[in-house]
Image (cartoon, rainbow, N blue to C red; front, side, top):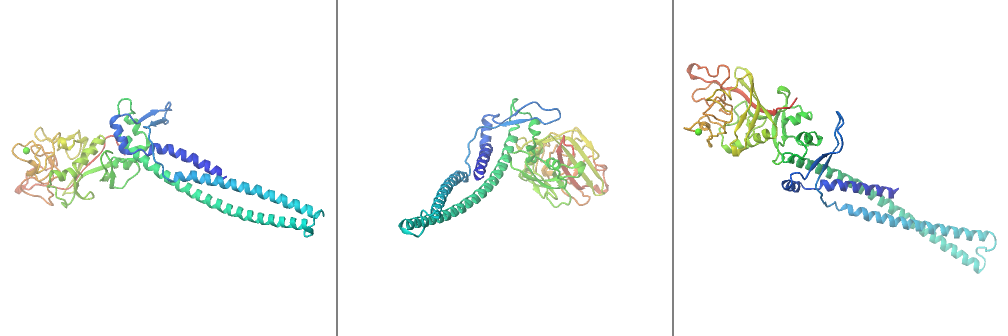
Length: 440
Ligand SMILES: [Ca+2]
């Protein structure tokens, strides 16, 4: 029975080893390999796809070696110990049987009268022999008892080790599988035509270990508007975002929020690059993060606005992309739909599409005589200069002077002249994105 346990354990260890050979691979090594050969990891079809069913696939990974935990060495040792003990027990058993036979034989001879115990020299010798044998048997019996206890102890240790190792192996395999998933995903952009298509990779359930944006959390059933950790690009570290799980079915990753003026938006290039404010209140997510999110999937942009009269309107753009810092976070905005008007494409002269990002300390705008960011106290994709600026100063009521408040040029009545030159601002503004093909 114990031998069978050991055999079973050995086969488990071998199976686990084959898993670990794959799993032990370090992420960095795979990435290095991936740079040399873009197709070192292959996903191949292993048969015909059934109609409406799943297709069997096999992932081929580069050959690897690994260092098993040192406890594995103990298994063989314990196995040998148990075998030795088994041999000892068998010998003892055999010895015991011999002794018993001899003792019976002696007793038989005594009762037959041929040799009467306690009479004459021969009888005494036989007596002594029986006592010797009795003592031997007692000793053997005690040895056997000890051996049994030892075996029980070893068996207990073996079971404990078995349990501990299986837990370790499971945890180890799980963590390495998660690691590998990152690596496989990071390769999806580097594959040649021989590699599996994006659809094939995305159809794998293991893909969902990575949450690229809020829509992935929505897909696994998260329905509360909260902060969640996302990894839009496995090559870059993950970060927190606020997810709107209510508007239009949810799954929105919020990139900007205004609601009470608690955060100053008159900030530097560096601040707008990394982001600032409180994700649950007022904030700018950060241009680098916005770039990664819009790069990871085809995104749409939704802007929600509310004025101080309680009027709520929205603008929806079916394409939204922000380039990287090298390209000055240039914005690409697609077709408009909604109720607030298309202020980002206001006119031929005021058009924020395809404009670079400008901050008070970095002039990338189209206004030749100065810096729009400095003039309007914010970072934004300024033209020369604005038909919209959602990062403007927060005013709690109407204001006069430079129109540096939160501004949306197509808002009803926004451009009308008010007595005394007063300008209206907004109570709340929110910008958020969601994958274009996401179905809530
Ligand atoms: Ca300028």
